[in-house]
Image 1 (cartoon, rainbow, N blue to C red):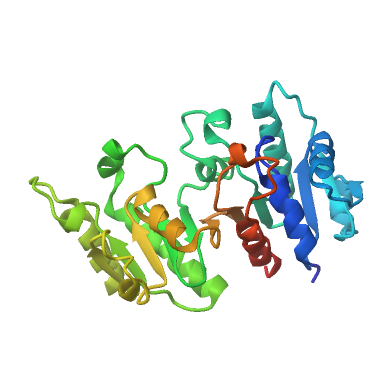
Image 2 (image 1 turned 30 degrees about the vertical axis):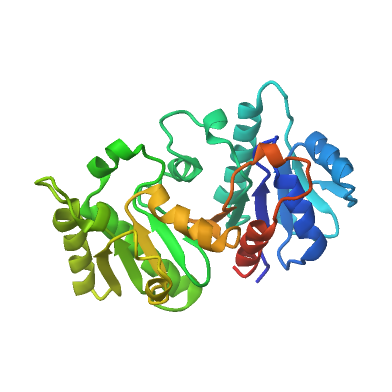
Length: 313
């Protein structure tokens, strides 16, 4: 069976993506052909700035269908770029990638970092939700994956004041099921999952305690169905060394509750995987970091991990 290519949307024009992309190509080899969707103008400009030399091969869908690609060149789908309209440029890059994925020419997709405030309408919480909507997927999960410990937030980029209103038992169960299925299918074992409470110490001075009325019953239901799931645990202690050694995944109730500790512990050694899509979608676990652009000091580890993960699929 032919190995399908990895489709890469470069993302935000002003970002560290090309720096880490060039560093990745210099130090790693991949079985899968890499197909970059970007502007040739931006690509050549960045290659000149970083002194990176490699031939560019402009390709189209016909080339993908023939599968006559390798990584001796940069395989580029060129997208016109207007410096005054980066939003349209990013959308066009995504549209081409989605067309390739829907045609089944690839089932492996990476997007580079994107400034959500400059690209997304307010109806989308993040890129994860944007992509899921385009493929009519309602049940998905954001898994920040590391081979030693992964995390998943039940809610993603919500303001804190509305998090408690959005949490429910079905949402917790849906995320846990996606995580469990992913680990069994793609990692090769049944995970041990810890779930945090919403409130400090899983306690509340209010009459309504979400940890007792929502989180605990969801865990109990999943346990009855055979899941290795435990909690709710206080979020301020679950990441202590002796605790995190017991689990493969920690599910939290909101974004920063679990992403802050995992990024502190693993820094760039983690990747963002969207579970529930009809293809593998991975992104490096960091943002555009425009302040670091062209400084040649950004760490490529997360992009390397993302590509190596997809290269095995």
